[in-house]
Length: 204
Length: 204
DNA sequence: TTCTGTTTTAAACAATGTTTTAAACAATGT
DNA sequence: ACATTGTTTAAAACATTGTTTAAAACAGAA
Image 1 (tube, each protein chain N blue to C red):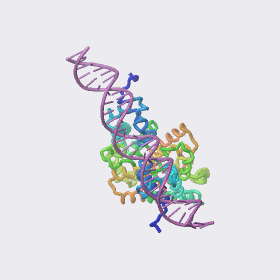
Image 2: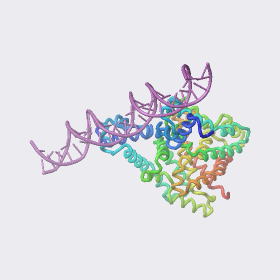
Image 3: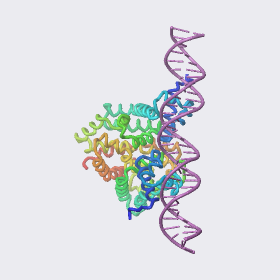
Image 4: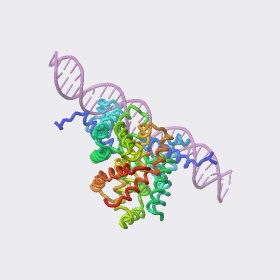
């Protein structure tokens, strides 16, 4: 069963772990081969190059992890419900994959120009439907006049950034891994409250 | 005058630019030498190694850019004033040095273990005085009971994260460099309002 | 000038990273 | 059994990296 895992998969998994942990640039193909327990040349046999392997992994990671998030944004919930669900779902996803934020941001900084690769980022942002919903509610006067871009950037910042500075937080607040996870979980309630507060206050 | 800039400085400046732009790992010592228009060996003559050059640059960058911020946090202003000033000052600083966020975060992800180097990060976080002020005002009942860590993380997230995803924002919101800067400037008022709102609401 | 220490250069070095080649192997269908 | 397929191995070729060396050019002081 799991004894004889297909080599392609072994490479894929080993590379994913290493890329997330050490970053793409600090991971060598020899590292990957060693971790996957395969011959170096197999990497080129299955994936043409390190770069190509990385592209495959990146696309997969983005798609897998953002599926639920997109669904929420495109669902028929109310604005309030959407925000609450989105925050919780996003945080849960990152709690399972805490290195994702640093990884994505390093890629973002690294290779924006390469357009094809960047499709993966689509998953990370708002959807048309959600943006429209924001504008609509705003126009109807249910909530204060709001700039959807600002709002979504706020939300994204509050959710994801703490993962990027995890080590800094742990160091300064003098908390350990377990306490950090608690700290993050507290944000599931905090962030929606903050955001919805901002929406409620009419007039500017 | 500026014609014959000392080589040490030329190396320093070229390296700083490249490190910020391409990241430390993707910058080779030969790149630096080329950009600085100096011979390769001079790099090792003046700075002992690439690693050492990087440490020097990192320390300098942190110190320079966080001076004003620390001063604000440690001043005698009211909480509200501090928040307003801090946000504006931080954003102005990052507008002048937009690559700093990605840079710092990559370092944070890259080499946390190396304690000595990490002193630079002290500048990036809250100070004791500010944290105490938050707790005090909170205890006096002037503001709602607040968790200083959450509050500071919120503030940091809202200020800095947009710079890290600048390219994503520009792409999705279909704005150019100039409009991005405007977008960021709008946040100078938005972020303090959001934060102070959160403080005002008594009870939990 | 000659001497001294500093600055600059070009080349070499060692280590590591990536890709390619060609041969060995295993499983399968004919 | 043979030939064909896809897979794996070992070795080497190739490229790039950070670092070091050895010697020349230079500047200022004696």
